[in-house]
Structure formats: C-alpha cells, structure tokens
Length: 131
Image (cartoon, rainbow, N blue to C red; front, side):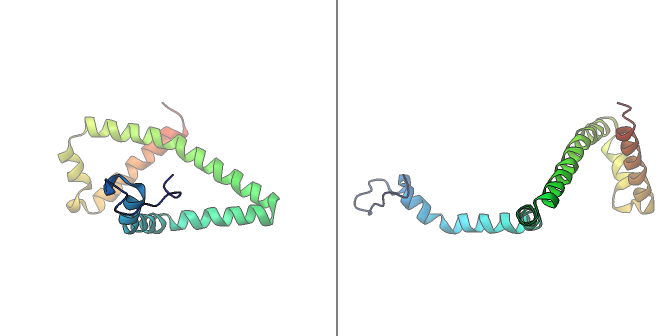
C-alpha cells in the first residue's frame, strides 16, 4: 500500500511509478482540487452538515427534514428529463438564428417575455402530464 512503504530515490528504480513519489509530487494539485470542490459546493456541504447535526440533536425533526429534502430531490429529478426533452426538440426544430433573434443580446424585453412563455409551457406540460 502507498502509506505502508516509503522508498528512497536509490531504492526506487522508476520514481514516477512509485506511489509515494507520485503523491508527494502532486500534493499541491490535490489540495487545489479539494479547495475548488469545497468552494463550489460550500453551501450544499453546510446544509448537509446542518441536516446531520439536526438529525443528531432532534431525531424527529431531523427525519422530517431529510424526508422533505428527499421528496424535493425526487420531484426535481422527475422534472429535469422532460425539460431536457423539450430543449432537445427545440434545438432540432427551431433554427439557432431564430432563437438568437428572440433571446439574444438584442432581444430586450421581448426575449424575457419569450423565455417566460416557454417556461410556462413546459411547466403546464409537466404538471398536467400531457406527455
């Protein structure tokens, strides 16, 4: 295992293949990657920690919070596939020039209204299950 043995450069014939030397050389890369991950998901990690602490402090309320969180996650996961389907169909059926015309930089208020109407259509399609 990597943590059980350490070799010296004289003993290690191929330093780049030795786990000890690879980890020692990439320590900065690993820490940078972990810092980026922690920074990106800080809010999620804090909420997860808060949920765990709440589950420990008050198990009844903690279970309810976990149950509501899982219900919200499942609802979100059930909504995402139809949205991707609509986006894929729109990408195939509507030319990119038309989309840029209505939703590009120069669209103004017209682009906002167009996006709102599209969102309402997808919401109605999902809620009413007209698939």
